[in-house]
Image 1 (cartoon, rainbow, N blue to C red):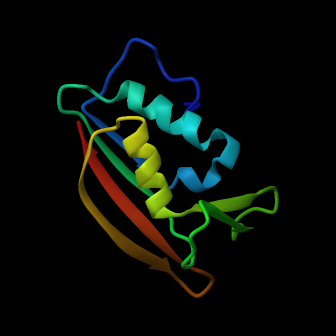
Image 2 (cartoon, rainbow, N blue to C red):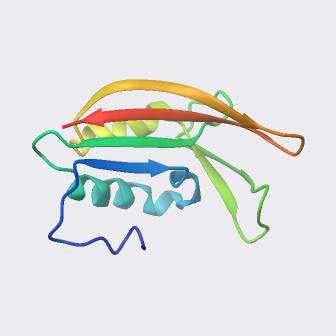
Length: 118
C-alpha cells in the first residue's frame, strides 16, 4: 500500500514502520510522519520505527548511494532529528530506543529503532 494513501477512517493499535524512512525524500519526511500519526490509535496505540542511521552528524540527514538500486539514493536521517519531529507532531511518548546492525559480505548498515506509545 502507498504510505501516502492510507485509509482515512481506520486506526491501528500497532504500526510497524521498518526500513521505510530512508526511502522517503527529505521533502516528504514530515508528511510521512504526520500520515503515520493519523492511523495510530490515540488510546494507547504504538509505533515501531526503524531506519538507517547516519555516521555521526548534526545534520538532519545524509544521503548515500543505495546498495540495491541505482535509481535513487537512500536518506539516512539523524535519530535526534527524527525524535524531535515525532515530538513536534505529537506521536506519543518514546518508550524504548536502540540500535542494530545488519551486515554480510556485501554491506554493513546500522539502524536506529524507536518505539512510541500514545
